[in-house]
Image (cartoon, rainbow, N blue to C red; front, side, top):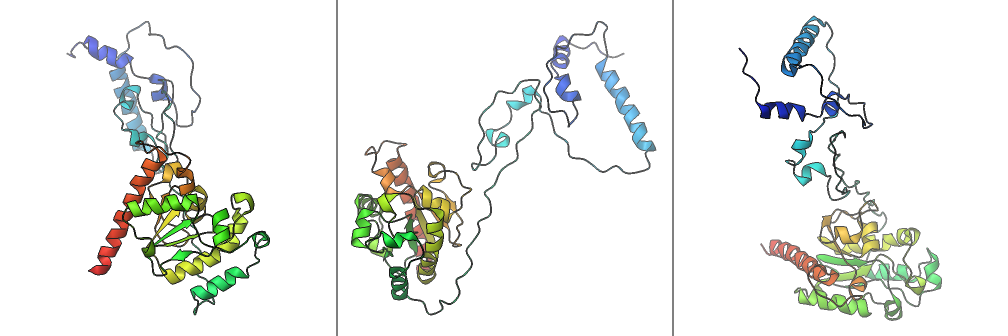
Length: 324
C-alpha cells in the first residue's frame, strides 16, 4: 500500500511551475493566467508514470531514428539561487544587467560572448633594408592626409630602438608638435613620473603615437588618418621587435586592439592580442589622469598605479628570460 504523502511533499508538488514545465521550446511569450487547484484529487506521480509508459511504447514501435533537436531548458525558480553569477552571465566583453526572474518566465542561459578575432596587419613589402633614419625622412615628407598642412613638426617617436616594451598613444599634442617629441607636455610629464615610480628607466623604452602629426586643436584623430599613418608605426615595430606593447588611452586601444572592445575603463589592466601580433596591455592615457589629482583607492590614478606595476612585473619576466 502506498504511503500517504506528507504535507511537505504535497506543498513541494504544488510549488512546481507547470506553465514553464509544460511549455514547448518555441513558446516565448509569458502566460498571464491563474492556476486553480482541481476539484478532484489527482495522483500526479501515477499520471506521470502512465505518460512515460505510453511514450516508451511509441518509441519502441518507431522504425526511423529521429535526430535530437536542441531545446531550451527551463530553470525552476528554486534552483536559480544555487547558480553562480558566472553561470548566468557571459564574459566581461558583453556583461548583462541583473534582472528579477518570475515563475512565469522561461529562463535560458545566455550565450557567452567572446571578442571578435583580431584582423592582424599584413607584413609590409619592400622594406627589407629599412632604418629609423629612412622612416623619419619618409614621415617628414608625408602628405598622405591633410595633417601635413597644419603641423609644425612631425613626431616620429623617441627612445630605445631595441626596447622590449613600446608605449603607444593616439596622437601628438601642441607641445609635441612644437618640439617634435612625443609625451613632453603635462601629460607626458605625468607619464614620466608614473613609469619612474614603477621602476622603469625611460631609456629602456620606446614611446610613440599612432599619428606622427598633431590634429588641429588637439581633436581626436579619425580612422582614415590613423589608417594611412599606421605603416610608419608598423615599420618602427618591425625594427624594434618589442615583446609587449603598452597602449595608452581609449582611442589608441580601439585601433590597436580592435573596435569591438568595450571602453578603456572596462578593459584597462588587461592583456589583448593586437593588429601587430604583439601582446598589448590596455592603460589609461596620462591626459585623462591629470584631470583628477586624487589617488584614493578606486580612482583613475590609483588604478593606473596598479596597472603600471602589473606591466612592470611582465616586463621583468621578459628581461629575466633573456638573461637565462
